Amino acid sequence: MMKTERKIGYLLIAGAIGVMVPYTILTLIFDYPAILRQDPGIILTSFYQGGNKLILTWWAFAMLGIPLVIACIALGQKLEGTFRFIRWATTLGVVGLLVQMIGLLRWTFVVPLLARNFVTGNAATKEASIVAFQVVHQYGGVILGEHIGQLFTITWTVMITYAFARLKRVSKGTIALGYVSSCIYLLAQTELFATVIPGLREVPLAGFIGSTLWILWLVLVGIEMIKQKEAR
Image 1: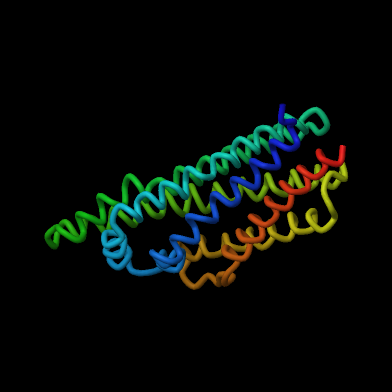
Image 2: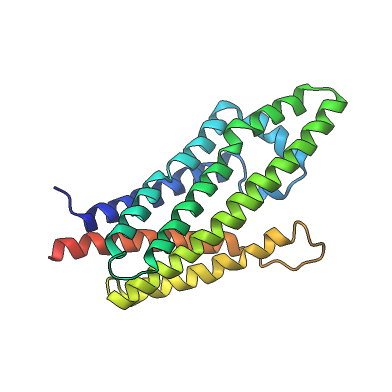
């Protein structure tokens, strides 16, 4: 039977790769994430032109992160007997991942309707679609996915990295990457506040660099957990 360490390792790698594949596809067919800062009319028109392939890609982007949720729970169960704070870390990690999934699913079940109404509707319908999109995008995307989701995920990463450092379960380089990726990822929050605070200076590329390094951290942790089990 597959032991816990190896199971967690494979889940972390599968989740990281599962998230990166649809993300990469979206950059190619939808100019994501740069398009998110375009005029709502441009976003809705581009989304409508993307058709069913784009809708299903967004669905895959949300659902292929499920292995990370399972890994987060399994890792919490593995470590909670050693550190009391791990239960809190696991709760934050699971909630963070789930709200990000919920935020992403707006592109599958809400935005397609708004895009269709915008492209095929009259002037009043177009205006209403833009307003509705802005509300959904700001709430489902900025508040849930990018603010709460990312903050909780960053906190989980820091707490788990600290536990790994105390237990010496992964290499120093991987531990350093956990802290560095979290700090850079946190700077991406400036972009969110800039949407409601005019003139606020945001940190360019913090979200892209931070999330990419975080994905790399997941893969490295997964590989090292698998190797630990094999070494035993």
